[in-house]
Length: 225
Length: 225
DNA sequence: ATAACACTTACAATGATTGTAAGGTTTTGA
DNA sequence: TCAAAACCTTACAATCATTGTAAGTGTTAT
Image (cartoon, rainbow over all chains, first blue to last red):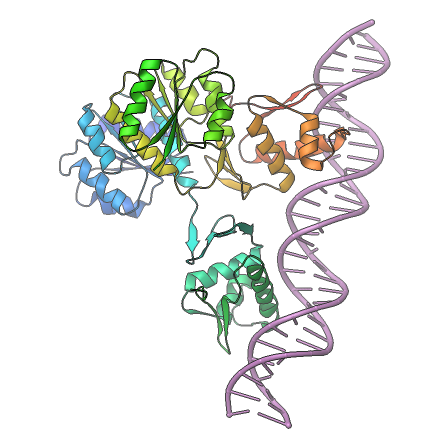
């Protein structure tokens, strides 16, 4: 399941929160605001950060701002400060929810679940400028529409987008598709490349894959500009 | 900028809310809970719905569920009910935030802005509270993971979520799957329903489709609460 | 011109999805 | 309580999209 980081100095509350979320099935990391709280949190790569504002060494606001600037998220602020100004400040820094202590566990869980779901459903889109690929569902989006790529098509196109504007070598492609990198069956790569090119053609993306003779393939930018 | 729909029967509060959000630059539509609140909201296609729970003709909970099932969102519930059970129920139906009246305008604005930002740039997700379906890619998301549904599974589940909490009649389902509504092959519906139930089981969503004998099927809420 | 490299096409194999058929289980009402 | 109706489940067959194979055609560099 998910990993939650709790930033809280009060030891009793920390234990309590840890218990609550471990019972829910989350993995819980507790961080006290010592040397490098932000770096530690980023390293833990959690699916949610539960952040107290009243910390001894650091300002919770600063941590919140730093986390959001790094694109880590979501951040739920749980604090005893019930001033509206604090709440607005936190939201202004990018906090995603703000709850005041004492807070009923079920309310906390409901909001944590909601936030995690909201964030996790944001798909990772590989962006190639005039088209995007959803990394999970292999749906290809253009300005005018979308189609679902087959597995092989998706693997190849994602490799090309990923390497762009560099060239993807034939051995690499063969390896990511069929495992063994030592032996390369030229033909099956070519067949699958033809198929990918044909589907790209079909949705208004013609001539986007260039053959680098003897080496591999390369994704080209839209040449209509 | 964005368009906000306010569902609120108290005329004074409605005017006040409208003023607040128009000053913020939003276009505001006010809807009173008359004949077809859900249809009216969908037609308006807003970037956020501000929903009161205490409405004369309709239950705010029902409207919330219907909106989330249609993929309209986000929904912020603003209500005078301060019971935790109400809040949890609202979250269970897919509400995205829950504020109790009286509420300071700035707090409201902060949370509305936050929700709109969270929701922008996302796919259309049909929200059933504890799971979501990406309408385009037929990927089903739960708190713990995601799977891609087959075409038939997706069509049926989307119809159920869409109609929730109403019953989907067998003829309707048959029609959306196989075209002709006059003739209904009971068996093939049942087989596909079994398969859908089995896949839902497999990802931790058991017993969510109820058979309404002689009529059709109905999506149930998570009964673990 | 020719040899290496790349492309295309038709066809076969595969695997996931869907449909069929038959028999089992549950519910309803006399 | 029993029988009929409604519903569920299972195994198997058909279908369809995807992928692999084989053979032949085109292109490029020297």
